[in-house]
Image (cartoon, rainbow, N blue to C red; front, side):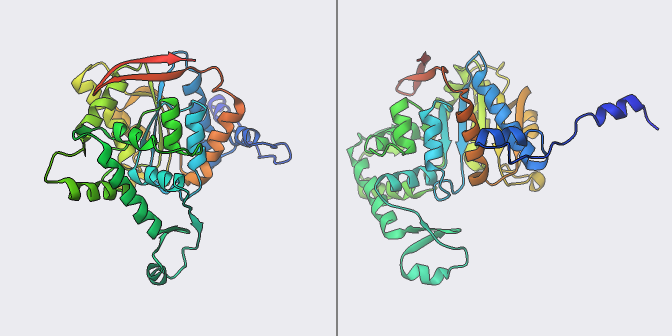
Amino acid sequence: MADKKLRNRILSKPVEMIDLEKSKSILALVEAYKNASIQARNIGKCVEVYENMLLDKDRPTVIMGLSGALIAGGLRKVIADMIKYGIVDVVVSTGAILYQDIYQARGYKHYMGSPDMDDTKLRDFYIDRIYDTLVDELKFEETDRYIGKITERLEPRGYSSREFLEFLAEEIKDENSILYNARKYGVPVFSPAINDSSIGIGLTIYYHKHRSKPHAFIHSIRDNYELTQIILKSKKTGAIYIGGGVPKNWINDAEVMASYVFNPDIQGHTYAFQITTATPVDGGLSGSTLHEAQSWGKISKKATKATAYVETTVALPLIVGAILEKGVWKGRPRLRFVWKGDLLEKIEKVN
C-alpha cells in the first residue's frame, strides 16, 4: 500500500451533509455548500472568490460580463442591486439584456409561458417566446423605433457603446433598471456586440433615415480602447463571467490588448469566477475554462478562480444574496471614471 500518512491526509476532510434545519438564510445555505460537493461546493467557491475580490486592500476593479436570457429569467433587479451596492464596477453585456432592461423601464413586461407552446400560433398573435417566457413583439417594435427616434438627438459622430448606453440611460426613471443604476453610480456599461440586438435594430432604423447625411454611429474599436484603459489604470482587476459569448471573450481580450498597446507587464485578471452551463469539450469560448485563459495571459497565473456549472437564474441570486447578506461590500469605496473623450484621465476612489 502507498504511504499511509499521505493516504490519511487525502482522506482528511469529509463531506458535510447540508442541514436545512440550520440553514435559515441564503448566507447560511451557501456557507453549508462550501463543505458539500458537486456544484453546491462550486457555488461556495465562487462566493469565496467574490469575497476575496471585494476585500482585497488593493481595491480591484470588478468587471462583470453578462450574457443569456437574464432579464427574461427574472434577474434584472439582482443585477441592478449589484451596481447599487457597489459590488461591480464595470459591466460588459450583450445588447439583448440591456434592450430588455429598457423595454421593462418603459413599463412593458415579460410573461410566463411554456416551452411546449405552439410557436406558430404565438406568431399569429405577435408574441415572442424565450424558452418559457413571453414578450410582446408589438411593444418590442415600439421600443426599437423609440431607440431610433431618440438617437436623432445625438450630434453626428462616432460613439463608444458606453457613451451611447449612458445617453439611453438618461431617459430611464425606473430605479430597478440596470442602466438607470449604472448612470446614477457612475458604472461604465459596454456592449461590444450591440448590433446583435434590438438596440441594433433601432439603430438600423435611424441609419436608414439618416444614411445620406452625417449621422451618429457606434465606433466599436473605441470600445476596445476605452476598456483597455480601464485595465491599464487599475491596480488589479477581477472578472465575473455570467454565461459566455462576446462579453466573456471581450473582458479577457482587454487584458491582451492592454498588454500589447500599453504595458507588456500586465499579467491578467487577479480574480475570476464564472457561472455557466457550457462545457469545454467543443473548444468554444463560452465553455472554455479559466485554466485555459491562463495560457493566453488573460487570467493571471496566480489568480484566485472558480467555476460553477449551474444555470444562472439559480446560481446568481445565491451568490449575490450571500455577498450582500455577509456585508463585505460595506465601506468599500466606489470608483469614479473621469473621461475626456476617448481618454480615461483617471480612476478615483470615492466614499
